[in-house]
Image 1 (tube, rainbow, N blue to C red):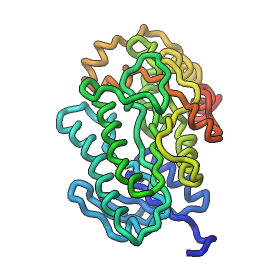
Image 2 (cartoon, helix red, strand yellow):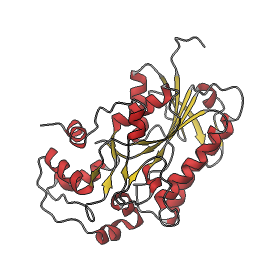
Image 3 (cartoon, rainbow, N blue to C red):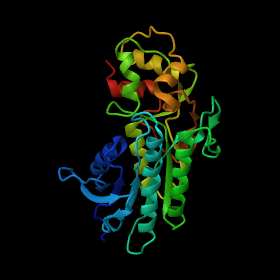
Image 4 (cartoon, helix red, strand yellow):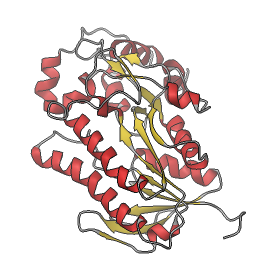
Length: 310
């Protein structure tokens, strides 16, 4: 391989919100991108390799293709109520993919220099206003499904680091995008003039603009100084009340309703209400100390960029 040939990135879960945008930005920066998918599409702009983590099968050309691997594979936690079956799918879709990648990376004949494996700030559990750093221990899995999922997800990446491959684990906060994720769901009632804080409104939301997250992933790939866990959040978390107020101002809508009571959300969403009711005040200090510069460090600027500052 000559030095001027494009570096190749293999993305698992590349058709989701983060993977789609990350692939675009990587291509813009001169990388080649391929997706590892259960159902490769012919129409995709990217080369696709097939895998099936549940069956333990993978195209044997996939891992040897890559200089870098970004692992985003996993069933969405915010689609549909958490039935026992859904919870099983959320967990096994994450762990099966990592086990399969470890099996392939243990073989000789590949040239993977770095492995970025997603996790989530849910790993910390519901922690009120305590400032959470990468050294904070995980939440108690017996009480908290999201903490359990994220913790197991991180443990499943450790055998890859043990192979001697530089492994980076970003703990992703609430990703802000108008294309998917939590923001359109939060914004919908606000746009209708029926916006309200959820639960007490005091719970912390640690967020990051989608583009900053993707730029952070790229820094993690390119710079060997990054390894281990990092909180992938913007430097200024907001309480749910403050988040809702800023969003309403950016959307030029009034907030007229009282807070939506927690018991109502639990009735409507079941255990999934953890996503909006849990409080996580997550520190970005370690990412800042690595020299990363956020384009959208503050909530108002991030929301104005997404919705237009009109």
